[in-house]
Image 1 (cartoon, rainbow, N blue to C red):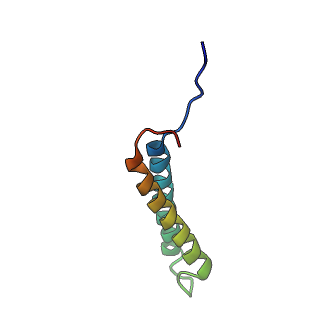
Image 2 (cartoon, rainbow, N blue to C red):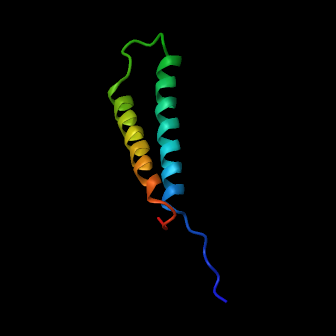
Image 3 (cartoon, rainbow, N blue to C red):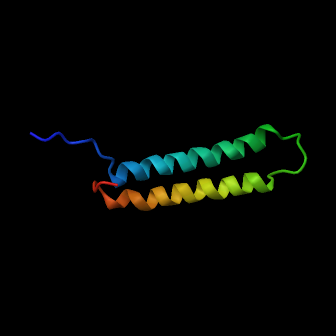
Length: 71
């Protein structure tokens, strides 16, 4: 009898990436809201991080419809 290693499906990976991207995006915006008194608003590194988090969420959303195939 052969043991099967647990695999992650594309749907599970998509959900994880979508949640990570969404939570990360919200957290980066929350950091800017908490530091309201700071001049300058969202800086270039925060903008880059927002783009990366948005891209992560989008990749996750595109993986979810692919179903239970191994990732």
